[in-house]
Length: 180
Image (cartoon, rainbow, N blue to C red; front, side, top):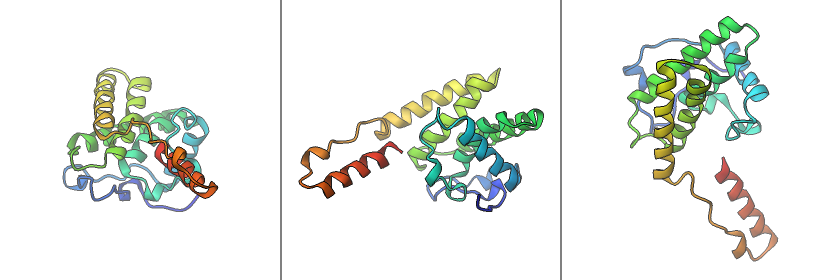
C-alpha cells in the first residue's frame, strides 16, 4: 500500500467547502490506521458497498468525507475492538460535521451521495440514539441528491448504435464507468 499522510491532509475537490475554517483541525488516524481500515473495508465491507473499486481505489485521491465514511464502517471490524469502535465513531462524527457545513449546491453530488451512503451505514447499522436518527436523515438527503442529479438514472443504450466492435467496446467501457 502506498504511503500517505494523516487523514486531515485528504481534501476533496475545489467544489467542497474548506472545512478547515469551520472544523477543528485534528489528526484522527495515523497512516497505518488508515491503511488497516482500508484493508478491513475491502475484506469485510466492499462486497456490500460495490461503488468503491479496489483496483482503482487511491486513498490519496479520495475525498476526505468519503474516506471517513469508509473508515467509520471498516474500523468496526478491527481486531482491537475497543480502539476500532472509538476510531470509527470519531470518523463518523468528523464526516457528519463536514457534511453539516457543506453547501450541496457547490459540492460534487457524487462525492456527497457516496459519503452519505457510507456514513448512514455506520449510523443505522452500528450506532444508536441520535446517530441512528441522523442516519435516517442522511439517507433522505442522499436519495434527494441522487434523484436531483440523475445519479440513479439508467445510462442511455449506446450499444444499439455501435457500428463496429471497437465502438461496442467503448460503449461497454462508458457503461462500466457510469456504474462507478
